[in-house]
Length: 311
Ligand SMILES: Nc1ncnc2c1ncn2[C@@H]1O[C@H](COP(=O)(O)OP(=O)(O)OP(=O)(O)O)[C@@H](O)[C@H]1O
Image (tube, rainbow, N blue to C red; front, side, top):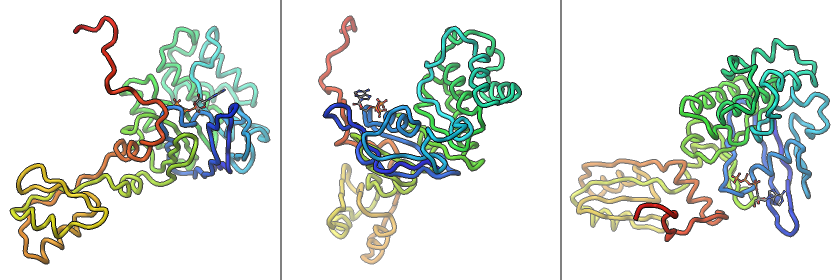
């Protein structure tokens, strides 16, 4: 289990993580989401004792990271795949880590196999592609067979096969009862990988919920209704919080209520309904709605074409 209590980090007069309290439970993949600069990496660094919090504290397996005698067995982390010495081979990098914990060579071979880089294990890391570097970083994270895993943007640089591999790996690690915390920008990927979400914006907690509840409660889902009495049904459904849009005759797009309520209302008034189709919001849409006010870096809509681009 990973716990953060009122974690706060200030750089000068800028507060980049503010009063974050959350628990990451074993047995599920927890996605850690937030717009650029929200404070995800800073939070992960504090969990791993790499940055000292200005206030608050965190524990992994019930203790602060720095107090674990053999941290590789407690938590495996991938924060920055490029932090490996470029002149070392993948094998030697892992062996050096293994020696710090008395981990046998057999386990190094196992994790090289697990991440699929056994064939290049004797090559120097400087020749590795971004994807190979990510795989090596994951091998290092798994080396100590840890109970908790913290990965910062692990699918960065991976091809579609690699993305699918990470998704299945994370799910299987969680299914083994491990605690898995993973940050990502790719909402569509998180929707497929994570069951639970912790979402931050400008360093503050915005949501701590399941993916299912987050999307369901986001209010961005809608119901398409096809009826010859669209005007009347629209009037009957009108209520605070309910939004009704009609872009074509006989078709309503209703937000803020569900298909059951619409169907019952129509039935009570004898209104024929030819179609009643709920559209669930995507995680991406729900995330954008939640974090709209927390986005630090916004592109200008009127951005000009890059220099040299064809007119
Ligand atoms: N050492 C530092 N000194 C000053 N400011 C910092 C430092 N490290 C991070 N920051 C600032 O803290 C804020 C949060 O950064 P952080 O990297 O934690 O965000 P993030 O959510 O991981 O972003 P991204 O998704 O872009 O990686 C940013 O505004 C960043 O500029």
